[in-house]
Length: 86
Image (cartoon, rainbow, N blue to C red; front, side, top):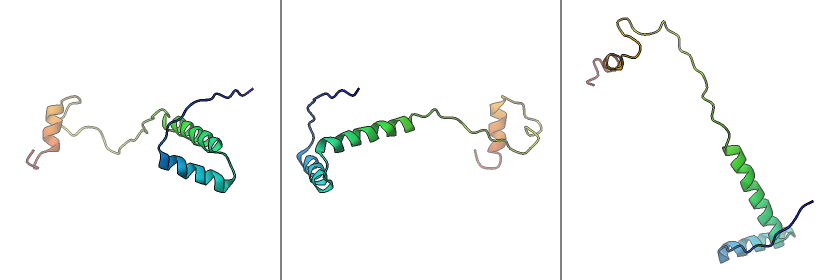
């Protein structure tokens, strides 16, 4: 069972006129256009709230460059910027 609730909606006069004119052209009510717009808004929010999943990428190679240790970020940074003025 669907219940209806009356409420007051304050919108700008130009927007109201545009919607009212569109409703008349399409032979529908202002209310139906408003309800449809709100439903579409809610649907769009569901789609954008999907959980982010990072894609896994792998790279060819044999690990770290010789002479570097995992977690030794200073040495890794120095190697990256070697010869580049960093």
